[in-house]
Length: 300
Image 1: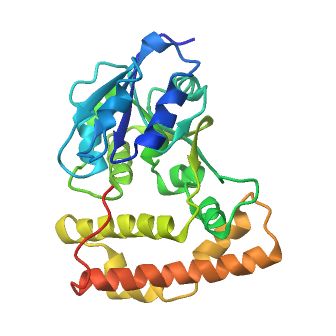
Image 2: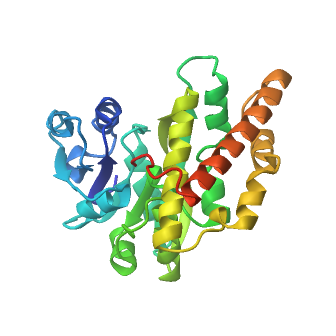
């Protein structure tokens, strides 16, 4: 087994219940406990994050007041003393061999591979998922496609070499969404490669209510709008992008057809209607932001 040191970074904002599940899973890793540290960064929560972290001897509590998960991750990166840095989220449950598999992937790869992204497995609360859970399971976290086609990995399961971090720099904390994509693309511009590691897996609960899905969409599109206004123009808020939002949800339908999930004909019809409803929801949300009718978005 590797003797490399690993720093695990978890940003958190008001998520104590799921944070405890995440830290419990990290306490059960097959990777030697003495070779990894966990840095939990409280992004100015109103919940008592520190007390949860103190229940786990291997975890360290940090605080970052600046809003945004990328600012929180950068806070942890300030004093890293490790060969590899592993990122996950407070609502994820790393599998027991997550670190072992991830580090093995990087050790087995060429040194030009600066980072690997692993699989994010979405699961339902019960044996029979509801429509919202099916939606999340069909549309969420296709890491293999993200990495091989779009050249980025989400930070729910991203493990990087320290040298890649040193050459690429930290996350752009001006971004409220897509900071993971920005970092991965910059890393590849620094002559490193990004690879997919199938055996590196974390589980993520599928959102089970319309409220949860809408909250996620407001968070994402609110972040995109922040980036559009303050960092770089985004076609999502330009005429063509808005027009496309009114079109039938063909991308979601393709995702449904390609998903490795058994769906009845009735469920497929319901999902298509749900896809279109949520697509129109994001369109009107974007218009509300553009015309100043909405001035608050969800925190990360």
